[in-house]
Length: 191
Image 1 (cartoon, helix red, strand yellow):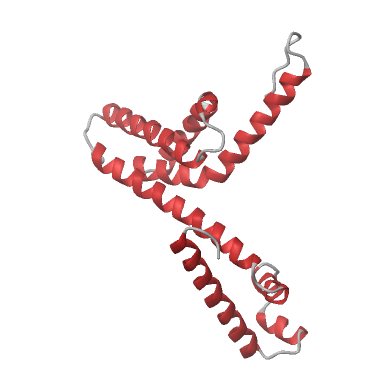
Image 2 (spheres, one colour; image 1 turned 135 degrees about the horizontal axis):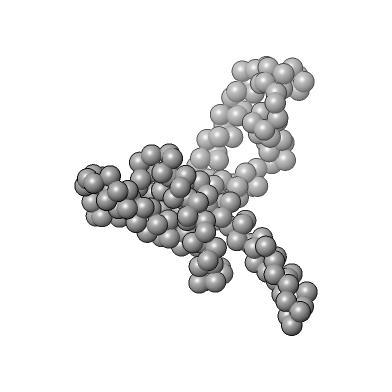
């Protein structure tokens, strides 16, 4: 919540509000990855729910340490890893048994999850760019077939095409997008 100080005036409240909005936007974009990582470490959804609540608090408290322009998800996953690991240890002590994975195994899981998330983001960004390179007609076909609540039969009927022709066109578009994404990722730049 934005704070208002008579000394700092409204500018501080606006800056705090903007900072909070940036944090919430970054957190929302990374939430699934953070939750998945915590679940992989603690093993139970109820425990993962507890961990992710603590993670959100810690991330907000440490948000001043985050370097703007760097990878928020990677930074947040690192925090999540440490919070989840501490939670798992505490639960093991509370239950009086040594169960669960070793620190080395947890580290490998964390590295794997983080790398997977980063690759997914790179692929999604490449796909967005590749879709942008399609003709307007092809983008419209994709949008109508995948985003709108319509069937291919309805689409084909509305556009005077056979269902087979629509399937074939979609197959060619998907193949072109797949190749474009692969080229984009293999070169590390766009075409």
